Amino acid sequence: MAKQLGFYFDQTLCTGCKACQVACKDKNDLPVGVTWRRVAEYSGGTWQQEGDTFTPNVFTYYTSISCNHCDEPACVQVCPTTAMHKDEHGIVTIDDGKCVGCRYCEWACPYGAPQYDKNAGVMTKCDLCIDRANAGEQPACVAACPSRALEFGEIEELRAKYGDTAAIGVQNARPPHDPPQPGHHPPPRRPAHRPRHRRHRQPRGDLMNVHELPLVAFTILAQMSVGSFVVLGVIHLAGIRKHGHSAVDKLSDPALYAIGPAIVLGMAGSMLHLGNPLNALNAINHLGSSWLSREIFFGSAFACMGAAFAVVQWRRWLTPMLRQVLAGLTALVGLALVYCMSMVYMLPTVPAWNHWATPVTFFTTTFLLGALAVGAALVIAYQYRQRATAKVLVTADIAAGADADAGETPEVEAPAAAVVADDADGAATSSLLRSSLRWIATASIVMLGVEFVVLPIYALDLANGNVNAQASAAILMSGGGVYLIARLVLVFAGAGLLGFFLYRFAGKGAERRLVYLATSAFVLVLASETIGRLLFYSSFDRIGI
Image (tube, rainbow, N blue to C red; front, side, top):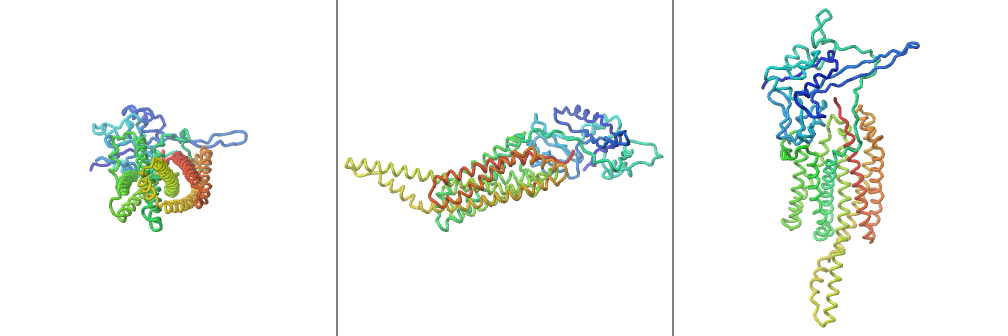
C-alpha cells in the first residue's frame, strides 16, 4: 500500500484571503453551495475601559479546512453502499456508481467534508487533487496559497518535518534566533482573560425542514407497522387460549393485512430522500459497520417475512404452530429494524440525536402507534363484519317472505343458515375485542407516561450540554415551542383522555362509541408523533466546522 498523503496547515500564516477555497472550487468546477475547501473565521474579545478610554482587546484568526482523509473515517464506516472508501493512497474518495445520495456521511463527518451535489444526486468531496499529484504538481489549494500556509505530501514526512500535528502550539516553533520558515511560526498568544473563541454560525433556516419528510414518513410508518405486528401477535397468543383460533383469526386478520401496505408505503417514501435511487440496491453492501445498511436489510426482511406470514395465514397453510413460529421470527426482525433505525441516529457529531432518549422514543412510538392502530383496525373490521352479516340476514328474510307468499319453498335458508353458522362465535369475537381494547388503552396510557418522563430529562440534558446541544434545545423549546406544545396536547388527548374513555367503554355495549374513540385516539396520536418526528429532524446541529 502506498504511503498516506495529506496536508499540513499553519494557522499562524493564514490571512483568510480564501485563495485556496477559490482555487479548489475553480479547479473542480464545483456548483453553487458545494465548497470542498473552506476558510472559517474565528473571532472574539472585549472592550476594556481605562478611565474615559475604551480599548479593543480582540482577536481574529482563520482555519482552512477540507477533508482530513482520516485513518478511520466516520464517513466510510457509516456509508451503506461502500461508495465512500479509502484508496491505495489512503485518500477517502467516492464511487459515484454506488452512491445513493443518502447524505448519511454528511451527518457523520465532523469536518463537513462530504457535500451533496443536488444536480448529480450524489455526494462529493476533496480527493487531494490526485490527478495533479500523479503529475508531480501540488493540489490547487496548496499552489494558490500566497502565504504558504498549506503544504502537501506524505504524512510521515510532514510529521518528521513539523512534529505531531496533534500537538499544536509554541513547542513546535523554532527557537527565536533561527530564521522563520513556513509552518514554524508560533500561534499568536491571547491573554487568559479573553473569552473562548466562537465560530460564526450560519443561519439555520426554517424550523420545519420539509427535506426530511420522506424520512419522517418512513420512520413513522415502519415503527407503526412493527408495533402493530407485535401487538397483534400478543392478542393472538392471549386470545386463542380463551376464545379459540376461529374468533381470533376473524378479528385480527383484517388488521394483519393492512400492515404490509403500510411498511411498503414507508419504504417507498424513503426512496424520495435519495439523490440517486437507481443505486438503491447497493444499500446493503456494508452490513459490517453501517447501521443504515442494517436498517435497510432488516426493513426489507420484515416486509418480506410479514408478507409471507400474511399469505400463509390467509390460505391457512402450515400448522398453527408453524405459523406462530413464523410470526415470532417476523416480530423479532421487526424489533431489530426499530433498534437499527434508532442506532442510525446515534452519531457523536449530533448531540441532540446521540442520546439514550432516541432509542427509547423510537420504541415508545412503535408500541404506542402500533397499539392504537390495531385498536382502530379491530373495531372498524368488527363493525364492518357485523353490518355485512346483518345485511345478508335481512336480505335472506325478505327473500324467504317473498317465497312464502308465493307458496314456494324458500331457497335462501341455506345461505342464511351458513351466515348464521359462520358467525356462531360472534359472542367470543365481541368478548375478545373488548378485552383487547382494554389492554390497548392501558398500554397507550403507559406509553404516554414514558414519553412525559423522557422528554423533560432529554430537554434538561440538551440545555446542560455543549454548544450544539444547547442550540438544539433552543430550537425545540424556543423556535419549536408552539409545535412542541401542540404535540404534547395531541398525545395527551389521544393516548390519555381518549385512552381512558376507551378503557371504560370497552366494558359496555356501545360499539359505535368504541369506533369513534379508537379511531380518534389513533388519529390524534399519529398527528402528535408526526410533529415530534419533524422536531427530531429539525433539532439537527452538527459538531464540527
